[in-house]
Length: 478
Image 1 (cartoon, helix red, strand yellow):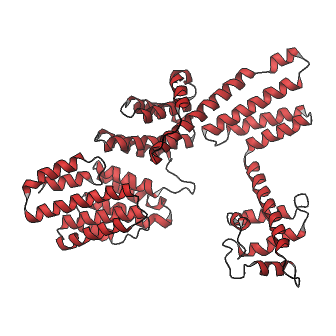
Image 2 (spheres, helix red, strand yellow; image 1 turned 30 degrees about the vertical axis):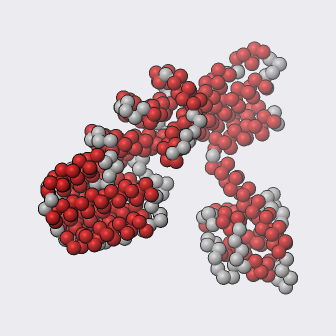
Image 3 (cartoon, one colour; image 1 turned 60 degrees about the vertical axis):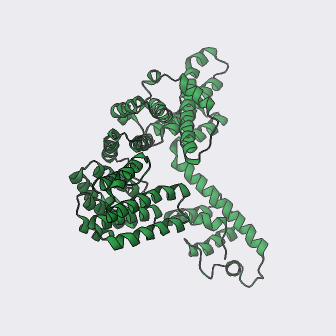
């Protein structure tokens, strides 16, 4: 099989890109080897999978050089040339799609040729493209610094012999300010990423210099740069979880400056704030359930939930449903489930819709209806499989299907133990739900009400427990 870096790269090409690449190869400026073009025309017929039984080196070589003996080194050389041209094509494509970078590179080339008038136009064009760009704040400040630096340096260098012009046209103070803003923002984003990664992999990183930098920041000094204040509050919120002031300062900032923030920065802020709310809820601070719900509503209004393909993330869809049901916002949640169903990718749509409706029907105590909806769900993703199995166990308990519940509990235990995709810490988490529900069933069957008080205390002590409120409700009703 003729599989290599070239075919892996070409797999990513759309039909439009293949057409443009063909034109690129046929340009004598970029490619002077007809055999390279011929190689492309042979292998492109197998796009996009490149997995036909005919897709072999010998077959390709025979099509390239009919009647000649197979020569592996010749084919490898042509493959190398075609790979280089493919890489060059995507670089040029990338450069052409970034008007700001294109203008900066053009400016460098014009300065080297002493084309000052054209250079001034190029710098003006760079500023204009930056203003209408959709860069996130990090890239925006990076390019703003580079354009300002280019403009100031070129004016300084082209008027080197004229001190009065240098004084009038040089603006190094603005260059320094733009560089400082970029450096500060970049450092804050790196620090925030380090904080998140430390939690994820349980490893300490050297962040002392970041901490010193943050401690020197006074948010009021950046009244006209809300994104810097936003990242400052995000970091403080992460580092000092118990100090809720930072969360609410961030919330107020977003409310008043949302229109001035880039969509990508706004998305990041919402994600971090939602995670903060979830942590506080887990610690037993129920007030943050409404805070998280309001954040989800804001995301819906601002359309920050949209992914690259303009669909709603299925996990966001599920999280909104669960948040609404937790607060008993039943009518709102039902409307949400139906309204945004079509916004889900077709691949996930039905499963997540049925799951959302099954959770809704369960919450309003239509258990039979919920059970019917669950039967329509076919999840491949392991955690949604677990969530569906847990809901199924809850339904069996509510409906009094004793025998089925007992056997299903054992099946659930075996599923957790045998599934290698689930990390041990997650298995422990879900096993606790199994253990507590099993005990509730045993107490109910044997009428051992005296044990329910101890069980209630044990469940209450657990911070991380799926469906903890439901388990407590069932213990109280014993």
